[in-house]
Length: 603
Image (tube, rainbow, N blue to C red; front, side, top):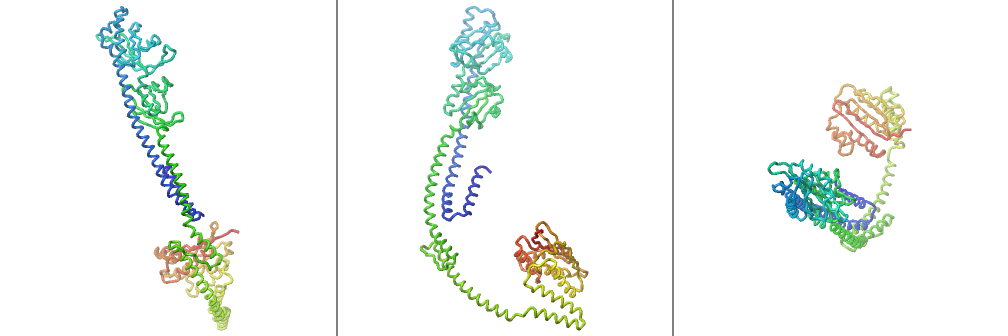
């Protein structure tokens, strides 16, 4: 994702946070109005600005590339002309004969001077033409104000370069030479060896100097248009020309821009002295010279920046105007809501004798009408509740007067047990005694929270009665740590689960079914696990049972199994929280496991 996408996501996130915060409706409307106007204008302005910049950069690169190619072509033509000038001695047998002699008479010197004048006048930008023979003599005609002062010192080197080229021209980069007025002048040179036409033996060397005005005339027009810079370097990276004439002759080998301009031509963005430029370059196939034209980005983008600033100013003005309009509109639209808010606060304080005055038939009017209707209905319901409450008290009093005293039930069971003892029916007496304890434990409403030890004692009484019914076809075992025996749980949590394991675990099994009730602690949780070795259930039945426990659907088997487990699960969640409850796992012929998760605090 780019920076633009991130800014838009941040804007949306801030707007969502603002809308969901504690702002009034009036402030929310103001924010919405501003965003509906501000965001489109800013987005359009930003996109237009970016596209404008890209278009400018693209068009500039294309234009400069085309102009640079033409400039390079002009320079190649100038070098070609200098090469052609240096060829003239190769076609003159007369000149070659003069150069072959060590001694020249006056007439021969005049003829050599004639040829030099001819070559000097071919191009206006040619500074001087120098011809050397093999005897150290140099011939020239003054076309400028001074003669090169390095003719004798560099003659050997020039002759060596010309010899190595074997008749081909040697192009030398820009050289700085002193002039007669104490300043400097810059020239570049073409060297060529002169060979005798008949014997092909070298008889001398010709050197053609041209001023950097050739470069200046080519690049000056472009620099004036772009306000940029132009640098020309040779194959070795030495500066042949720059429009400031500050780096002529300086080697730029290893310069980052030279490294990036490794192809035949192209463009790239760069920075020089803290200023951003678009650099367009091209390499001459003839001379190997590389021309780099730097166009300052701030000059290119000045119109785009002006457009951006105008857009920002217009956006700011529109935003202020929209703010003023939105304040007026939001105040008008929310005045009725503020009135409604005041009325609701009065209702909250207990004053139901209020009413909203309906002035318009819009949504606010409809809301006010429903508000008034709601208040009337609340008054009616309050009156009904008072009436129902009074009648309910009368009904409860009548029910209390007619209910059977639980002590009467306990005393009756005790009488039955004593008669069984008198009649020597110990089994009936024991069952009656156990049933009495179960009934006393279940009906006692004074204590809804008991210890695990008390719950297990009640479970033993319940199981004792079931053993009479199922002829001892099951075994119930315990594996509970001692520290959990005093752990407090809700009453009657284990009995429905054990009952379910006994009733459904023994279906279709002749051998005894083993049932294990174990417990453990995990962090801040106590886990009770009841596992049987009964017939289990398939995945479909297990899915239905889990749905029944969670209250998503009614039991599918026509029994109260799902109802009992669901009742325990709901009691746990209501008492301890949604993080606790019952989990069931089962597989066919592998038994069923029920886990109770309860909160546990270590002492």
